[in-house]
Image 1 (cartoon, helix red, strand yellow):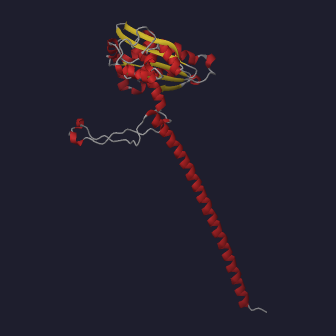
Image 2 (cartoon, one colour):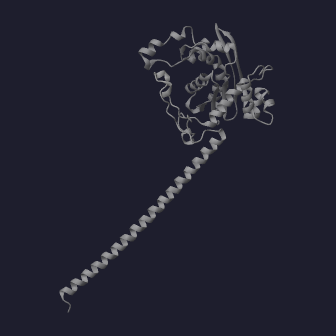
Length: 331
């Protein structure tokens, strides 16, 4: 008969074996966890690397297509001479601008390079039209840019074609309306040219840049007027002494004040409202077209008429009902 000491030793050996087995199982479990976590991390890293490479490739394509700057970074400008500093304290670092990012380009308020290039093309092509004396005295820069944007085997000949043919052949757009408001209306100089063109998914409104002395006379009004296109359309201009109206409300009760626009560009916009209503807002607000494909509304202008596209987009955004709201982009 075994004594109590022998039974105690057996119990100890059993407990040791049990402890070793449990520790072995725990070790295996930890090893499996470690292996699985490493595998998950590896898969996650490979997926993130794949996404990163796709983004880099897409960025490279955009950079190469539009000849953008590589290795770019933002450079903070140093203090200028206007701050009472000497010229030696100015920043001499190379200014390289920002690297284009397709991720940021899709955010609200961002700029897409392809849309910006398209808007610039639509803006510059407005320098010609369908008249017989088109491009009678163009500047060398104007013709060089026009030949570059029309492209083709013989761009010099294509650039001399009527505007309607250029838009149809190169951009698949049909001209709906030519804008040509020139002269003195109600004692105010006016000189605004451009066009409205469209296809199944896009509507373009483009204003020509400053080209004549009448343009300069029309642009010389640097005052501002209240934004009231619905009322001022019937009047035909921003109103008499419009530069002095609305300042009390703007300064003393800004929450009730109306937005203001530069009077010169505002007058030009008012003269073209009937055409905008007929060829842009009318088709978009037609109940028969409520199930039609949404359109991308583009306003293309060059420096010198820069605010006119913004006027169009603001007017369209406040006029259209939500079901007919198009995509709005300004070039």
